[in-house]
Amino acid sequence: MKIRACEVAGMFYPRDPHHLEQLLGKFFHGKETGLDARGIIAPHAGYPYSGETAAWAYSAIPASFAGTFILIGPSHRGLRTCISRVAWETPLGIVDSDPELASAIEIEADEVSHQGEHSLEVQMPFIKYRFPRARIVPILMGNQDYRSAGYLAELVLDAIRRTNRDDIRVIASSDFSHYVPAALARENDRYAIAALDDLNVQEFYRRVSEREVSACGVGPIAVVCLVCQALGARKGQLLFYGTSGDVTGDPTVVGYGAIAVM
Image (cartoon, rainbow, N blue to C red; front, side, top):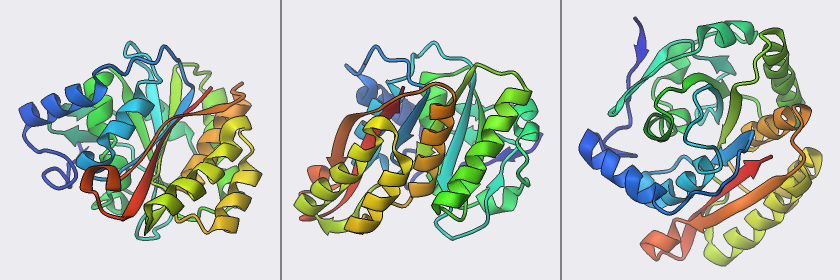
């Protein structure tokens, strides 16, 4: 069986399974939201900086969920949009793929492009820890403009409908402002995120452009909102916002948001 090996363990998150399990337990402690989100937006930085925020996002989905996560993350190297159809390794064990759903999404598989990319990998330990029976369909997104997001959302929706699946949740992997003063990051990120209160994706793109918000996963965020909206979601809810400066004390920060789409 082919497996996508964990490549940023020891850098973005602990390689030792006991250390990782303890850290994730600490992140999730006291974060039961009582929500059942259809989709979430979670950050993908190193766990010391964004792990707390990511746990808030995953807490918007009940721990009993045992279906399939469609994960959409940005290609930081600007590679083409592609899907992975193999299981993914984590220090806590293997996260199985969902071959039926992955095959139904009409995107070319390219396991090589997924190598070395952290935007999806850092999500996997959260999934394995909180949802041990869940499966995955990871999608790496290249072009992130509005038209590309709409096209990818339609491909995902078509596959969900053709396979008649209702055990699906979607995840967008994204950080927000990168390396700007903390006050500016908070102001601009919250301004852009507010457009997702009613899932207004076009307004979200406009605000990101207006304030030059350097979010790396604008496209994945848009896809998740469009897919969830088509499946009945009506709103986005910001559960938590933080920055790297909250941990480091540095005045120049990266912004992180945990958002539930319901």
